[in-house]
Image (cartoon, one colour):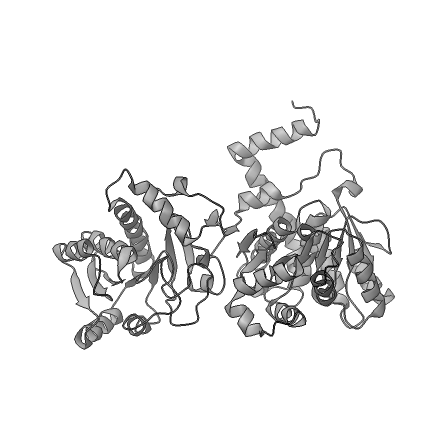
Amino acid sequence: MRSHDFVAYPGDQLRSAERRVLVNEADDTLMQRAAAGLAVACARLLRDAAGGVAGRRVVVLAGSGNNGGDGLLTGELLRRRGVQVTAVLLASAAYTPGVDAVRRAGGRLVDASTPEGLDAARQALTDADLVVDAVVGIGGTTGLRAPADEVVAAIPAGAPVLAVDLPSGVDPESGEAPGAYVRADVTVALGAPAPGLLLPPGCYAAGQISVVDVGVRGHLEGEPVVRRLSGAEVAARWPVPARTAHKYLRGVLGVVAGSDPYPGAAVLACAGAVRAGAGIVRYLGPAGVTDHVLRARPECVPGDGRVQAWLLGSGVEDDAGQDAAIARALESGLPCVVDAGALSACVRRRAAGDRPAPAGQVLLTPHAGELARMLELLGHAVSREQVEARAWHHARWLAREADATVLLKGSTTLVVGPDGEAYSQDDGPAWMAAAGSGDVLAGIAGALMSAGLAAAPAGAVAASVHGRAGARAAAGGPLAASDIADATPRVVAELLAARAAAPNGVRSRRGERARRGVRLR
């Protein structure tokens, strides 16, 4: 899955938008539009997976309500293209016009509520070239019940699965999936994605996400729950220096990182900041670690001095001097990226009401295990596994308790502010699960905050660029964390070039030059 212009709205807002569309339309207008888009997506997947469309075997798992209706009408369209369609009915209240349409088109109907029908459904799945999951949609809840759970369990491991709106059994609002659920290769969101499509762990069941515009986008009201920044949106937020800028205007980042056991964390954090464009990186740490940093990054300036933001804690362990420096930085009121060894001190202070820096200027960057430990410090006993199972819930919990922005690192990175601003970025390969990767991410985020970005957008932009740099460095194979830092400048350059090449990008760039007082030729 890769980032696109994804903006997720809660289910009640999506349903309200649908009702507004249907005020002047026939009742089945949205279903017909949805089926047309779904049929195109199914045909594309059949060509990729089975080498063609006509004569291929498709099984539609149809529940009650609109989601099942979308699937049945899609089955009718595929049948008219020569596809062998079996519609497995998982509810007695299946969409009647859709059932009739499949029957008229010559499709096969199987009632899975009977033992004979359940056996027939299992056999059909065994031979399927494609399975369409239309069991439940944005009105669903977590976990599938009989007979849907038994039918879904019978989907062969090698059969491609296309989910309608979201994989059935995944909670549409939170992404939680504690019971039986579908694992899709492709998910087609109708109108706009549900939040559960972008939130872990549900997003891992979605596969590749695409959106079919059925005409509701212009009718959506209210604020989205979560966003996923596209490359163009990342470029629009990236702080590009003015023609007349000097290094102090570019952003001065103070880094308190590393310790004698973990000098590499300091090296990688500083590398991330330098390669992301910080004007100056000031490093504070033990003499031995300072030597490591300067050998690897001679651009860094050792020792204390005036800074515009802090990066704190990466690789800090059992070092009283580093702990004291972290405490001074937290008391400064300056923007802070808080990682690893600085998390406990920061969270304790902020939960107790000691908040020199406002919520929008503090970015906590835990992984799931660290987030669990932070909540335990605050009296909430949770395990790493519980955080991973309810990532959205626990990230928001810590953001509220600490009155800070939380960047929860993972295959999909969540950025959650205490005011509700939220992002979900999924730009990098699994190869990025490597020691030091998070230190580079912290450095990139620190560079952005030193340049003036607030915590939530800095976290989202950093996560996206970090993932893209990892993808570029890996090129389909293994990587080291330092490779991510080294790939960062080229990724940023490509994002900015793509934005400048777009028609509206050219106009905005000229406007920016004019604002800076640069003469246009």
